[in-house]
Length: 273
Image (cartoon, rainbow, N blue to C red):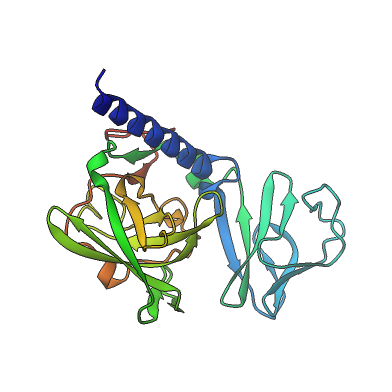
């Protein structure tokens, strides 16, 4: 077996392992597809459908009351008191369901993560293109740039100042993508990219995400478009994913990476599920 064949096979195995991990992150009982609701809160207490007690906001915190006999418990199994205050990321259990505090720009919400969520129950796989090493390209990252106005899928707009620019070449064309700060699948710092391309709405979801290694001292990093992945809002309508800026909508096809979720028999080249 030639060294090129060995390298190609190793590349495909690495990609398959990544895609299998992605499937687990999405389809696990409390994974991405299990988000059943995001309840935005105000200072006025109210009952939430399917959630015990009454809930309201105190600043950026999520507060529940009337919970003494609710059956809600901390993650370590201790039952909650009559009133509980949660900050972003705190979780409670309601049987198999997880209640998670969330906040966006100081406005809190209570998220319901339910293994029985309809979208998760019906999810059969994630369609993806076959991996292709030709879509792994070097890039030069430059920090800074004008603040980025980001529109999220629910219409909310926010401004990011942690921006940078990636310069790279594809098929002889000089291209750029804007980055923001992010974390990778292991929670380590990474460059985050939200991008669109001409496959969107046809063979792929309307936009996709990338996470890239932080650049080295010379500003060099690598873009592996094979690891373009679907945003959480592809699996649940209750996420608030950022959409690509106009500058990040590439006027070419990117026929690698994840394509779209499927809830029946898929018709694509690769499937996990």
